[in-house]
Image (cartoon, rainbow, N blue to C red; front, top):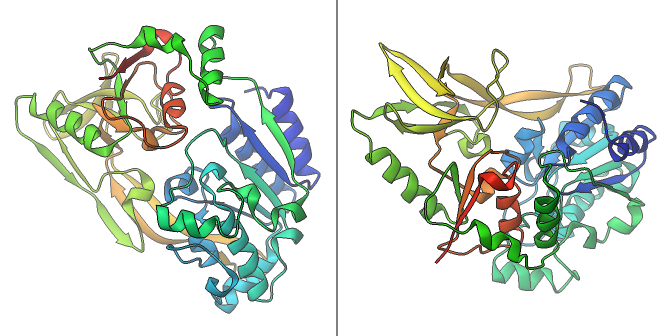
Length: 391
């Protein structure tokens, strides 16, 4: 895959040691170029950690959650007193780090970024202003989850909920690079109207997609709607239910890997493949039909049966190596499961980062967070694959 001009600018900046906020619309190739940057920086001997606000985002980048990495409390608004003292090995490891990559920063609150800085200082380490920081994300997509109590406390200290409101941020001299070449879609009118809703505007253009008959994957803001579609889809099929239970070991939250701990499925059920296959053309997000025959299980995509085999995902945390001179990822837990889930419907939150040829957005219960509708409509590759159901 060739790089766009802005992707090349980003690589040049991070390889020169610059702090960067890499942003851009959905589908502009942020994750791809970040992984390339990580590869090149590691080849240059840089000690890197990749972290994110949520487990799913952290695992997509091959890293660890912010709260786990810095020992932050999961509840409440951070301040210096709330930051924890770390074990000696964790302190030495964080002091060794050269580069910190933080993905999905639309979900990163300012007190969490400050909490990372304060934790380093509280433990006698050099602060974030001595590290190279790479922020990745689109602030027009899903924001941090805040209840009313936490929000009221946050606004006593900060002027907003975005990460750049952090007290430490002005010390970081961060350069913003915005990717502007959309790679997921190529219909100009569709892209232009996506940009309108990304900026919070209204786009009557999307009224033409309102319908009543769902097609493709159904995306909905609320889990209750998703569960309703998946339950109805499975119950509509004849035959016996086949159940697969995941094998979970160690310190792990299965939800962080977007893998079900229990799968109930029948022959003919609509399913989605959840990993990128090394053996065939299946990718994370491929939609097909479940087929079971003589004890073997398959996903049928476009008339071709692909064997389903269990995969093992591991949860890793950064530790010092045996020589205490470098960082390495250590396995602390694992989940083994078939890599698919029912795909009659998905939540919009779980769809972030995925691409589909056909999408139906069910808004009979409306979106409840900024950026949800934009995330949903930007999952589809073009207007011919979009349907919207409303009241």
